[in-house]
Image 1 (cartoon, rainbow, N blue to C red):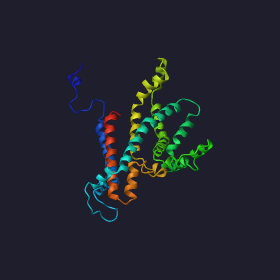
Image 2 (tube, one colour):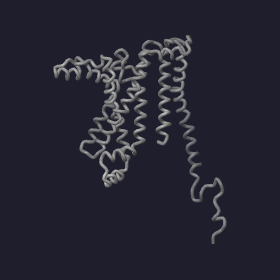
Image 3 (spheres, rainbow, N blue to C red):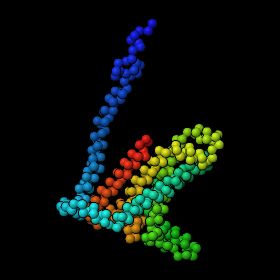
Image 4 (spheres, rainbow, N blue to C red):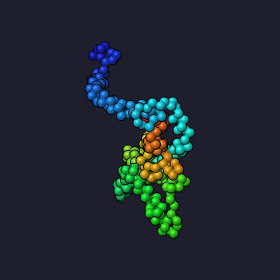
Length: 312
């Protein structure tokens, strides 16, 4: 016989019968972990990130060479000088050009190669290793290698031109060809990283879905466009995010190649900060450049994540 108490719902706040209150136990478990690990992490983050950022913002309002205590307050003059500087405008354009090439050339190349090396073909693991090796190579070392390759006297480009009996070009010494040459190196250097991201995304796709598409008579292009690419959406968005942020911070690869030259034609915002701020002992000016770069990176990062990655 069924009693009234057995059919009444449990009181508000009570756990369902037969189920422990796991939420409360998890909270008790996480609290000691937070107390133990959060304060050191916050202290390190404050010491190594927040305070240097605040100091850079403060120094950007001074005309200061880095020695002693800054005392010559110039208000927003450093920022005015930056936006009037033609080299900074070139650096800004170059940064967005690198972003455009990374998204339009580097990522499609990485995705295409990822689809190739994930197929069950002989030597696929070997090709994964070969394509990923440029990313493992240090940026400075890669820049020095390609500087020799582009050398018009003794490099690989010079050897090819001499083989055909032509006068070799000095690609890195010409303002019209230096930036395209750097863009080619950027694509070569970083496509392997994005390729590995795409390989991980492709391996996470359920094979039965692709087999069902085969049974339905879908062609290779139809499977890629209607099945593979939509299921790689989160990976593609993450790859674009890394490409944008990395392009804005490009420095180590350019310095051994051109150092920002010739005639400031290959400057990026970070090389501009180094060449016009650090090397010229204009710490206040360089700090202002750093603040502008930080604002651009944070604005793009948060806007992109809010618009395109809110569901990932």
